[in-house]
Image (cartoon, rainbow over all chains, first blue to last red; front, top):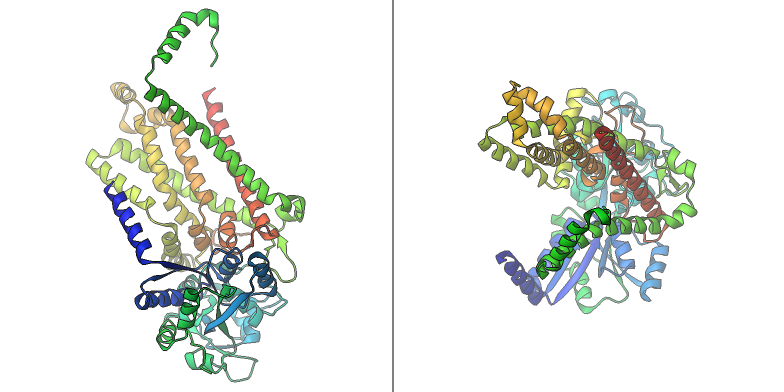
Length: 285
Length: 310
């Protein structure tokens, strides 16, 4: 009973303080960033509460279409049919904001002798018609210590992930599927953790999830051209071959509070948080 | 439970009189309990109806029996060849469930026997708290244990390329279903009247003989129920198996191969699929398959119990 009274008090307390509650859902790629933003925003505007949850870009967009969220986070642009669906449901066109950039890092276990790959070589590993199943198929003579049979363990993501879809377009090929039998994990964090503990593995995720226990590969557009490592600079000047925009979507013209929040994400304070979380702020025009 | 009126008339009348003099509160609670009993039937019916309703357009539309059950190609997000084949998922589910039960049932029942029959009362309380504590660990945490601890252990011990596989998921699921099996099994054993134990000991049976010859047959229904609840737990778990199996579509050739289960597929993909789309309906068709599998498990178990009773 005491607990119930306490809970009731907490609930009343919350609802009194948060006159405005913004629902923000979507991409797992920058869910941490969105959370840090929301926390900081709470300090600046105590009367606005922002509820951030992940689930994947597709989940956020589906929720926006169904009208259950105010802002959908996405690490891929909304498809035309999704925009049409949202227009049909709400009568208002969706509004798109680019809130940051992210370099898609491809990484391996530190024991792996490879330190660079070309996009073609990565496609050979992941694509449905790729023939690279052993590390020695990628580059002859490659031998990964601690990796039984020299077999490549492909770590991928579940299909509603924006990272999965961007990786497919940018690396595997727009009209191609992934090779079956990859480990389709349901979070960037899990992908990094798994590669960290598995000598045979290769994985991909947003740069923000990298840690020193995995080796991010230096990537070249085509074989033979100089490779570029993912970093703040290379993502900003677009020299890193696979970097992408991070989006926020709202349905129609957003309410004052929502608009204020989305615009706040481009202030200097918010950009500082972007960098701290491992992402890249949108270059100022 | 109909009785012949002629034989039991006086008794029935007496009973009726009693009923009419029952206090209101008692009748109220009787009704409440009855409603509770019926509600579980209604709920199961509603669940079945809902699954059928959501999967129906798929079952009469894109559904191809042969492809659905005998193809290993599950690729709803494909750009050029959308395919709904769940053979690999069914095989994955069965492998993981069976192996985890091979680990959990003997271990769980042995623990139940130990706690109920062999250990001191003080130790018993400690053990029970510890085992129930296992049940309080969220499944995502189990998933991380699978990736960060068991995965490297399996790679090193067995010299395999990847440690997220059927073995890993079975260990995790066994640990997750243990508390259930132990608690229910222990309750079943303690429900056997002490007079049984006393009679057996009076005849000179050792404690081991009491356990295996007297308690095991006497409590077998309860113990079977414990094992079945464990199967249900293993069959229905989503998040932890998603992470521990590796969530990889393939027909596993050994326990060291990654796999994917039906439940994990639903958990990973239902959020993305627009409501009412083909992918969404196909996922509900998987739900229907799961429903049928658990029905088969329960009916078989029921038959086993009844068969033994005769």
